[in-house]
Structures are given as structure tokens and as C-alpha cells.
Image (cartoon, rainbow, N blue to C red):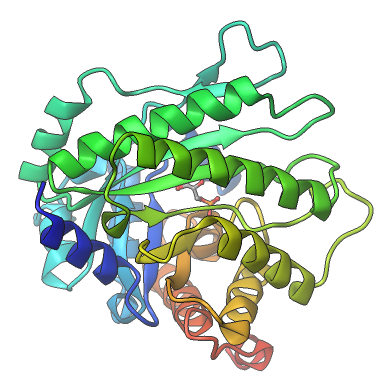
Length: 338
Ligand code: 5MM
């Protein structure tokens, strides 16, 4: 493990005003996205869509890295350049999703899951590194309902995240540690705050127990929000304050950065929340985005399978807005002006 390389990569991933594009949809997930715009889920269409995103002029000013799905890591752009090479030539760090998805937790019974993909990971990491990946991502999924999350689900997922992180660091690949608490229930913001607190506590305990170098990770958490079905929604300020309260309690200052997932928030809310937290300040980590849907939804719709220029314009706009939010310099009026 080369501590300097890991720390330098992690810092670059959360550099001021830049964040991460999560374009690592597995084949099943991208099908759901393509279905909405009536585009067939073929390898050629996936290549064309990702080509549109990665050749957007200027997106690199706001984008430090891109998380790729395995297929994309080994795919070429429409101009014949391997995607990781294309990204690296723009100063964008290529990353790779290495988990194999969330599966039902044996004996769980509460609709809980455990993320799989540890078997053979050491070997796969070498292959990904040779293809140009400098960081990786593993997503653990935590559900909130009347009985969940159970201690069982929290601990096995935290354990797996730490095992993954240790293997990445052994290969000098920065692990993005993503414990996602889903926001699709009817729970209050207070419940989300409590669960986020417990989960982050468990995750950092496991990272420490498994000797993961905190200076060489990026945390990708959910924001503290009420469930989407909760009748009482929260203001931008309330979300920002609750999220920072938990993070300040649970994330050691040795961690170079935190890059949020958007989790189903609207594009503009995800930007507003990030901006609000950066305006509040009072922390040492880089605080940025690692959005999937909140960065891509507008671009996907504008592209619609063929309108490359419209797709690029929509992508650049969201990348720019989130880059400003990562500096605490975003303003709603910028959305209207665009
Ligand atoms: C882009 O979506 C990612 C991959 O999903 P699947 O493995 O289910 O295909 C997902 O992990 C994503 O990176 C994060 O959840 C953040 O994306 P959002 O849309 O929540 O910002």
C-alpha cells in the first residue's frame, strides 16, 4: 500500500469546485433509464450515451472523476479511444464500480440486503488498475421501515465495505465507501438522522478494525432527508444542518473528502443541499457530489438517443451548477438564467 498515492488520489477526487460523475449503472439499471426515453438497451447505445457524457466540452472543469461500470472501463469512445484514456487525457480520474449488487440478506426477512462481490476482488482490482482505474466504488444499501435497519444488516454491510476498502488500498486504488440509507420510506428526517449516525459509526469502526487508511478513502453517504413518502418534508437549511451534524460527529478529519449520492432527490434540490452545507462550512473535508441521477437525468432526457448537442449542454449545466455548489457559490437564479 502506497499511502502517498492513495492520499493524493483521494484529495484530487474532492478538489475544490469539482466532484464525481457516477455513470456506473449496471446493465439492468441503465435499461430502466433507457426505457424511460424509449432507447433500446444495446451495447452500442450504452457506448453512445457514455460517449456523449464524457466528450462534453468543459465538463472536466467541474468533474474530478467518473465512476464507470465494468463494460465501460473496457469500451472505446466513438472515436476509438479507450474511455479511461479519454477521461485521463482531460484530467478526469477513471474509477470503477466493483460491487456485484445488493442481494437479499440470508435469514433477514425485513427486505434487507447485503452487497456481494468480495470473491475474486483482489484479482479483479489488478485487471481494473491495468485498464486505468485509480479509484473504486462499493455501495451498501440500508433500508428504513418499521423494523429495519437491523443491527445484523448494518454490521454485515459495514464489514463488507471495510473488506472491500482494505483490498482496494492494497492495490493502491482509492475506495469510495458508500453506505446508502434509502430515502424511499415514510420516515421523518429525525429517523434518517438517527440511522445515518448509527450506520456511519458502524462503518468507521469496521474501517478501523480492518486497518483501512482513512487518509486514502472518500466517503459517499446519503444526505439526512425525510423519506419521500413522509408528509412532513424538510427545508434546504434543515437538511444541510442535520447532515452536517451527523458528519461532524462521525467522520474523522483524517478523511480527505465526502462526496454525496443524490439518492432520488431532484436535480436542483441535490445542488441546493450541497451548496447550503458548503455555505455553512466549519469542516475540514472536501464536501462535494458523486451524483448519478441528479447529474444525468436532464442530460439523458435531452439526448433522447440521438440529440448529442442537447445532451452535452444539459450535462455541462448540471456539472457546472454542482461545481459551484461544491464551493458554496451556487444560487437558484443561475438555474433560471440557464
Ligand atoms: C449510477 O447508479 C449507481 C449504480 O447503480 P446499480 O449498481 O444499481 O446499477 C449507484 O450506485 C450510484 O452510484 C449511487 O447510488 C449514486 O447515484 P444517485 O443516483 O443516488 O446519485
